[in-house]
Figure 1 (cartoon, rainbow, N blue to C red):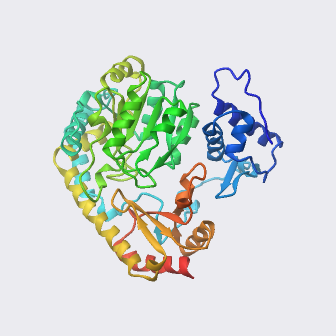
Figure 2: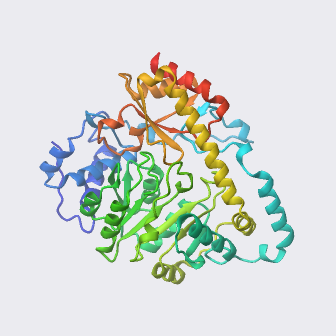
Figure 3: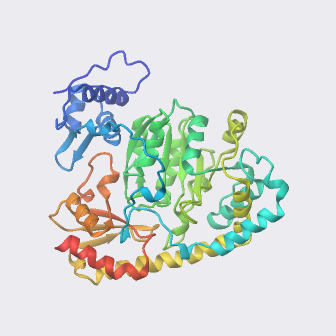
Length: 467
């Protein structure tokens, strides 16, 4: 069995040292493609470390593409020659038309909004008025946290919609959550270990990895992140989405939220990043209070974005910092300029203040509910009803579709691709195999689907699954 020494590893964590050792052997050819790695339990026992150390090392290797997993069989070394990028060839006059783009009849993976659903007339009116009436302000450098009018509008919105007491000065505006994550890493420290959800949105772990900070994958069950595993991991910062976890759709109940806050308060250096990206589109029941709203120890950093509520191409996001972190941010990081243009900020502030944003959310919630209901009705009234089970349909803009079939997930995904349907399986969002529910369960993101296409799409799904 593989064995490695854990003596003299300095300040490196056990899992990171193990990850580096295995990676080195893979790159050197010591572990050739197709080699089966030891099971987590036996490997941990042989090395004299905990199961979670091996689990996190495997998860990091899988996230970076060095190994892959087969449910119920284990982990295997991947052929890494395809990780080496091919030599670039010079091409003159490359245009958008030259880049082939796959067109799907239905894309259940990407977040999209149909052009007829976007408030173009209102948005263009507000931008036009902003350009005409704010000549001086548009040419002034904005404050490092963003235009005060927009921060006030967001503060009022959070109070009305989420019952959160957040002052305008606590809000920092940025061009997308990825940019804000980078600022948080600098603010909280690169010496911290960040906990990310497993399964979860892969880009979050990739961002932490690209910023050279250590991160662990913590299991998520039907009630959210496992607090016991979080405690044992040694992590300092937990990155979670309690209002609507992606991809499982789990909503963290109030009891678990207080457990997470308890974890954060047991150590001065611990924080929770609360990603509330999809809270506006909860289609049933009242929203559960945010962690930030019940936090009394200033341990929660709240984040949200307009890319989900307006359009994925509108790169405006924000975070609300506790006051002590705000003071530290101003001292250390206020030299960064706000990355969102003035005219977009002033226009968005008007969009919120004049009530257009609330009207848009209400209209889109009705629109998405209709799409969801008709798609689920189409599935339940079709032959798929005998082999498909719909789960987690009330939270956010996707649901899970579990298929009772002997066909492999890979084959089903290939059939769907050939038919013009883009699908993703729940297993793709795990960093390591955990349970049988991963198999034959698919994530159905219906935000880009039109009502008119639903009958055609259901018929295509029937052919892919039953034929």
